[in-house]
Image (cartoon, rainbow, N blue to C red):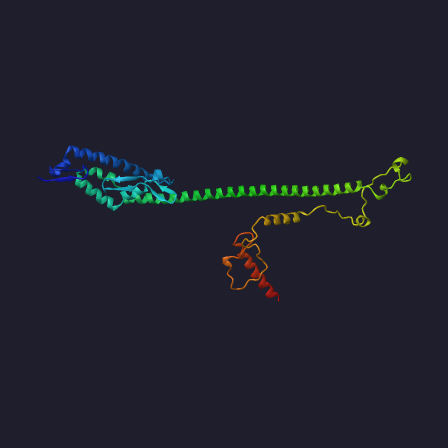
Length: 312
């Protein structure tokens, strides 16, 4: 008695190859081919118009089981962050290996010969699909580049407006600080002048009928502080309090006092001489700014040396 193993039914038949004509085998064959035909029909529908989509792992990582070849095939292709729907399955269906394995499967399982072409894709159809897919991919990349340029322009505009807002706020704050400094100094000078005006003179300590101006009915009139002759002819306005530049320098000094005194670069002298063996790409020891700025300092130093040598 002949023994036959059917891979589709996954059982051994002792009836030999007559098992291929049995009702159970024919039913399982129709069901398996029906599932594969649904996937092939969806792939064939994509031949009419290639599409490009944004890559989504949950959607575009799906695989299709090819009954003829006995292996799983990726349905979609991926290129960076872009997915090409049905491109992987169409490439498999148009390949020579799938055509050869389909012929073997039809021969071994006694499937209807008229149905075999429904599970194949001709190389000509796939070539036209590949050309359309390349055009669609190029158009999609151009749209993405244009979208990125527009987004970058919006970001630059937002940054410009933010800088203008911050600059305006800083100017208003600096003007307010300068006004308060001048006002406090003016109030201090006014308080000192008022205090000096109220101090009694040496004559007030004396007593006598001739110096008692309160009893004689005389009155004194305060006419204010007199300006010297050297100031009247000058005509220039005197500035009260420190200037804005001095205020900023003092503010920077206060910030430096809060830093560690033994930090790297605290005592660095930018006016020091540098030899030719020094490599500018490694940077100097710096007190402020970024490390790569020392490279520009070195280049400026060398350029100034060259100009000095030419002038001499």
